[in-house]
Image (cartoon, rainbow, N blue to C red; front, side):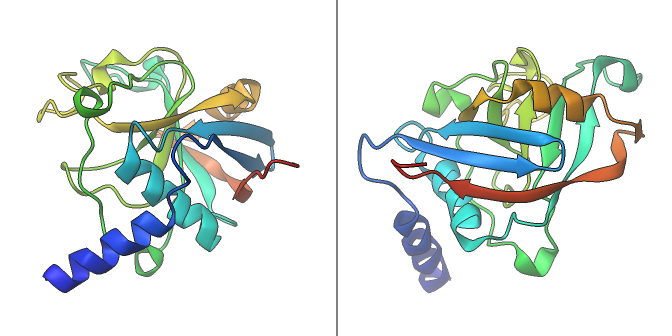
Length: 193
């Protein structure tokens, strides 16, 4: 077990940029593009995990598949607004990562913040979501999950929130898009992009 954890940690560290390096990724979708900046110094585990999927090309051809708006959560006391993507077949997913709470990172679920989806703490792997509006119930101490641990924020949309809102407005049924939206690619942008 220790050997597996060391292998996972080594792989995550290889995805990490140099200290102070700004990391921007382009999410190209069938509905338009988004640029996101990720924060390796604030949320190193979640950022490295996301970049590992990006660098492996595993998000290419996946989809945005779930949307949440306040009016489609009648049974939820604590409503949130997000779009969720990065659905991969289980055999393509890397092992789950430890949970980085917003209390640990100092990040908050503000408009455009990108965060790892999860069930219980320590189960986040490939799926991520983007906040539409401020979502404090997703922060540490928030009440969206009974465990109160919130979700692991690690980046923010810097361009393309119009595309995020367009995706959120697509036809859905029980919070899932009737036609999941293709993620053509997610890639890091270099200094010349």
